[in-house]
Image: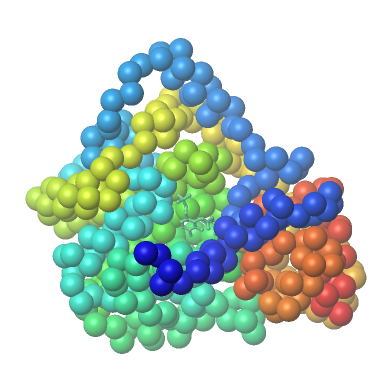
Length: 397
Ligand code: KET
């Protein structure tokens, strides 16, 4: 019955993480998957999340199905987090938000919705982007194309080329944009560039789809929502999938949401209804535990302040690791420019290492990067940063 199946080649990120777990070398270093590890190499349990869970356990309530679009408390909390509590778009009721199964669930539900209600529309993603963006849209039957983004020559952004491509797209094309902390490059648009992008999106009647998976890892929780708020204030209609996996360190809880900013409350009601239809035929309804964590942490002023402090500490630790790595590498490989480690933001840096160099890092030194050359800087710590730099220096020279 199943002999005709093609073997699954595996996911370039998740398979690598599995290979890392199986590697018996005690001094192996995991810089592959986008997970934040603390300085002791552990996935942190944030105090605010622990406290929220204790309260949930004490209340020990029943666990009914959530509504199709998730917990009302979580949806409201997410809206405040993304747009700021009294944004005009929220006051006028023109944002439809649903709790989803991780932001991956949100991205996929949005892709299915686009296939159904914008048939023939194609999506444009940055070159490069998170591999799963392409997989999810293609899986939904939507054709995926790329716009220029990363410039290997400078380690920066090809902004003019990006705008030129976007100016040439048919109306209602979907443009996938990383709201902050671009994966895999760490290269973001500046605020001025976002402001230059808005008129292009508007004039060409494009449909932006923001992915905000690393809120707080760039410049701050509110600062990283800059693009979301700018687009909402500019009156554009757009999608935004956001994740709590990284920002609350709750990867396996699958806490995320999808919001659609619409032109009016009436439109938002239509979108909310069709999104519910899409969810019902995918996974029916999202997870109650994730909803409890997010709504408690965001809804309780004390827990929220504690969360903000934890996010700031995670962000600062990554910046310290960026500086340390830059320092050691610059000393070991003089004449080569490693400034991109300092200018790139968030969990990732694009090292420019070839697949062959990445393979050597893994095989000879036990240092795991994604084969594209993406490094998860959040996997570095005071105990492994020097060894990582030494290994990199060895494969570069
Ligand atoms: N968007 C982006 C840009 C992203 O990097 C991830 C995860 C997600 C969405 C998914 O988030 P979630 O809410 O947990 O469904 N990225 C890391 C893990 C993965 O590949 O699944 C990574 O790039 O390593």
